[in-house]
Every structure is written in structure tokens, then in C-alpha cells.
Image (cartoon, rainbow, N blue to C red; front, side, top):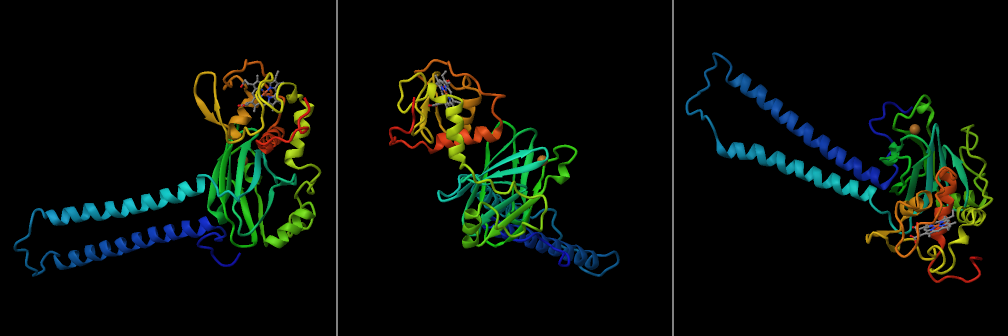
Length: 335
Ligand code: HEC
Ligand SMILES: [Cu+2]
């Protein structure tokens, strides 16, 4: 430890912005604390019992003073509110398009992280500096919370629902990852490291399947040694065939079920007349609980896969369906 750390490392673009807000709040607080304390002392001294200071013309009320001490704090409060709300909306809103997408599964008591190319890591995450990273997170059991103080991001990881958060790491280094939601006996062990690497180094790491990683020795309990056997999408495709999803879902609509080509991001009309956007959460729900939202024009005949698929395999299916782009390449889906 290097002395007493006032703040954790500042290692993402949010961290810089959050710190600015933090220092602004601190400055405002210090300023008014000193001002008020000085006035209290000054008046206590000046008008102490027995002092000769004149008390003539003392007023009961002063409208300007009252407006002042209402409006100034209100203005400062609103500035802080708008500033903080903007930061919050940035961090928890949609990420930039070029974001690197990482899937996170929390389970008692570890973090399971999955790169798009299939590399999996446990309690370790390797990412390049300077590029936005989007985390799509879900829990296999109870509520967890993904917390990296150096990035100033913390987001609940819930069972049954994808939550996302994004950030842009700025500084290569090794940063603590915590679970910030009490999740059972070994909650305190649900920790790990985020390695931010120079982009070139990261490419090397990816190419080596997650072997050439700094810190590989430092932390004994590490990755499942890469395993870049199948990319997420390929794993999903295999599973899709294995589960015979294509018995009902073909290359075009009009089979027993709708086609999945071009589904991701599309507006889907449902039986009850409502329209939903097909995002990750919708696709996941459609697989696990097909009856929750039935597509208009189709019979509710799809079997539920709830209980048959764990979150990892569900993610693979979601990733595969996401990858099916509109202009369909024939022969990709064999009925
Ligand atoms: C017995 C036929 C059948 C099988 C097998 C089947 N589905 Fe479906 N699926 C349907 C039908 C019919 C619908 C439309 C009605 C609905 O929403 O329930 C549908 C809807 C969907 C949707 C929503 C599509 C949209 O356009 O909004 C997704 C996603 C989906 N299925 C994925 C899968 C996956 C993944 C599998 C394999 C694990 C699978 N389905 C297996 C019949 C099937
Ligand atoms: Cu936890």
C-alpha cells in the first residue's frame, strides 16, 4: 500500500468525471462549512454578553437574506443533480457502438466472464485500454453486484434479467473487482482482478487464447486456461442444432415459428397487439418462457427451455441469434 489512498485509482473515463463531481461537492461543502463556522465565531464574539457593539436597528426579518439562503443552495443542489444525473445516464445508458461486449455470469461465489471469441475467464477479466467495454450481466442464483472501484462502476447482477453497464478503461494496470451485494457465506471471496492491457498486448493475449497474460502467475486461482475452442456464436449454433430449434425456426418466416434472421434489434408485434424491441432480454425470455410474449401470427407451441439451460448456454443461444443478420446467407440454416 502506498500510504493512505484518499481515492481508489482513477482508471476509466467515468472515474475522471465522477471524481470531478466528487471534488466539486467537497469544495462546496468545505467552503460553506468554513464560511458558516467563521460567521458563527465572529458573531458570537462581537455580540457576546457585555460587549459594546451596537444592537440598534436589528431587524426581525430580511427578505433579501431569506431569498438568498433559499436560492443559493437550491441552485447548487440543482447543478449537482443535473451533473450527477447526466453521469448516471451515460454510465447506465447504451454504450457506444464500437464497444467490446463481455458477458458476465455471477454465481455463488465467483465471476464467470466470457469474451465474444469464446475465451472464458474466472474472477479475471482482460480488456484493452482506450476502448469502451460493455458488460451484459446475469446471475445464476442470487443478486450479486459487479463493482470495480477504479472504474467507478457498480451494477447489480440479477437472476432472470440481463443488466448492462459500460466504461472505457484509460490506464493499463490491475484493478480490484468486488461483489458488492451480500450473497451468502463466501460473499467476501467473490472477488477478482481486471487487467487493463495496452491494445497490442491485448491482441497478443487474445491470439494466445488467454495464456500470455500478465498476472497469470500472480493469482493462482485464475482462468479456465482460455479454452478458445468455440466462439460464443459457434457454441450457440451447435446448441441450436442440438436442441433442434431449427425444427420450427428456419431461414424465413412462415414455418412453425418465426425466422431469427434479422431478429435482433427488430420491433416484434405480439399477439396482444403490443410491440417490443427484440433485445437480449427479449430473446432470453422467448427461449425460457415462450408464453410470456407470443409473436403475432404464430401459435404458442414453443416448448419452454426453462430449467434445461443454464445461463451460460442461454447466453450462447442469445449470441447466436444476435449474429443472424438480415440478408440471409442460404445454406446457413438447414431445416
Ligand atoms: C415446436 C416448435 C418450436 C421449437 C422447437 C422452438 N421454437 Fe422458438 N418459437 C416457436 C414459435 C411458434 C414462436 C412464436 C410464438 C411465440 O412467441 O411463442 C417462437 C418464438 C421464438 C422466439 C421469439 C422470436 C421472435 O420473432 O420474436 C425466439 C427467440 C425463439 N423462439 C427461440 C427458440 C430457440 C432458441 C429454440 C431452441 C432452443 C426454439 N425457439 C425452439 C416455435 C418453436
Ligand atoms: Cu456475490
